[in-house]
Image (cartoon, rainbow, N blue to C red):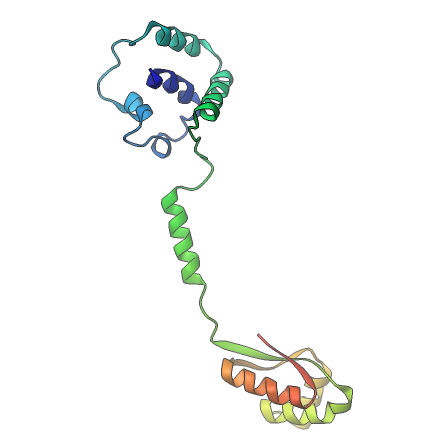
Length: 171
């Protein structure tokens, strides 16, 4: 009884993706994909309902399907969503892409004006620059002092520079 009514209500509403919609054990799946033809209705009321539904416009059948779904608690699948296997594959790819960062940049953001000379000396020692280059780098803050260094080294250099009055960012 339920199969015949649901089949027509769901036929137009859900025909977009039969594979995503019908599970092999569902009543709807058996009605659509059964190799045995439906010989006759078990009830004249169901047969009348079927005949009336086939005469309705598609929009009305969709509304009936939505109403049946709401009243009977049958979920309507979202056909715009990617298949479950694609979603799992996408999550796996994202997990692979998220790698732990191993190399960091040491960036001078600002410095205390009173400690400018000390910061220039420390930057000169860390970066291996001449006095003029170190002064230009400090005065041009924010600038990267050293690139692609290990986390431990970056934290150590950050601590040294902050002790002399610089504001440092490790990124």
